[in-house]
Amino acid sequence: MRPAVERRGHVAAPGIAAGPVVRLDRTGGSRREPSGNPALERADLEAAIASSIVAIADLAATLEGEAADILDFQIAMLEDDALSSSAFAAIAKGVDAGTAWSDAIQVQVADYEATADEYFRARAADLADIRDRVLRALAHDGDTATPPGAVLAGNDVTPSRFLSVDWASGGGLALFAGSASSHVAMLARSRGVPMVVGTGPIDLGDNDIAIVDGEAGRIVLNPGAADWAAYEATRADTVARSGREDAVLRLPAQTRDGRRLSVM
Image (cartoon, rainbow, N blue to C red):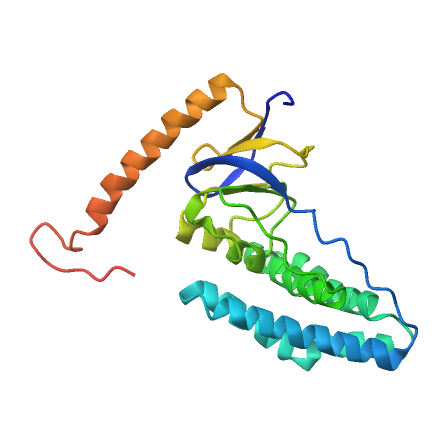
């Protein structure tokens, strides 16, 4: 076991969790080789976009509310010819499908990232999500499975990757960059998944364990005995607080003199 390392960041979703680290930079190993045939490159990209729409729609069908809305928005973007037109134009000039698609989406990502508004900058992750899904479809790579109770760690995480994880068994998110205004942060808060962002780069090993402390805005890699003791104390406090909050949340919203209020 490597020595313990603590990094401070910003709270994106409260709570505390611990588990084995799953590195977000680990993707499937397949790589699509260019065919050199523009007609085939176009057909392959069209097929990859179509299969991505189906995969997102299948995932959205298992969800509701904000989560389903996010994926429906991704479907609408993939169905919009304006997103793919520059990629198809590049393919017609001899560029392979993967490069053409990546370059086209990167222009859009750069536009979002250059805005002054943090909300719009955070939407860049949704475009990256679409980009990566289509690239995996081009290379015939499936989605990466995440073991129950894992801590996902890396530069950033896409909404569909977050939504593909079963968080019922625990787990958390530790992001080197990311934003508390991102779609993933909103989803993490609504599902009670502890999330810390903006820690800066961290050297991750293959068998690391991490604590994600969404109360103090920190992560502890390969915690020692004192770290585990602090983790258990914080976890007990958060469980007790959750119980108290749940009891209050079930009470009617009204003033002391009995006037009912609408809470939105």
